[in-house]
Length: 129
Image 1 (cartoon, rainbow, N blue to C red):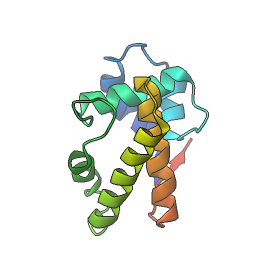
Image 2: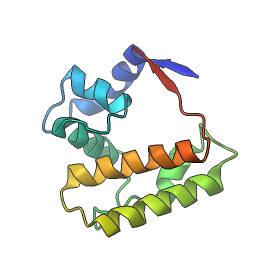
Image 3: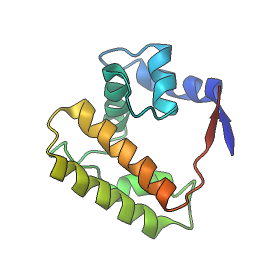
Image 4: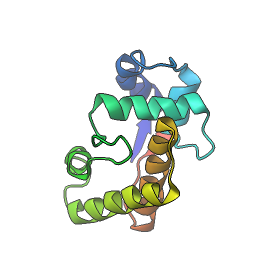
């Protein structure tokens, strides 16, 4: 499955405009390309989007697994158990890494989810640039 970058950017721009620091187009693209070595503004964009969708628990260090899986089950309706396990593992990993900075927490969680989903052979959409 391929998704056009332009369509993704268009969909996220209204949310990205509410973020601080305000991301540029390159940051939005970097987010969708899942760059491991993302710029700090890109990491903060991920955090901002996750905050807007109220994905963090009160402590701000862990993601609400049930809420995240609720969004993701639209794409992967037959993989809910795997998604729950992966999200829980990534929450535990972030606690073990003892990351304090909010943008780094979001980026670390996102990269963990991606890697574990790939390891569990999820079909990850490719981005068409």
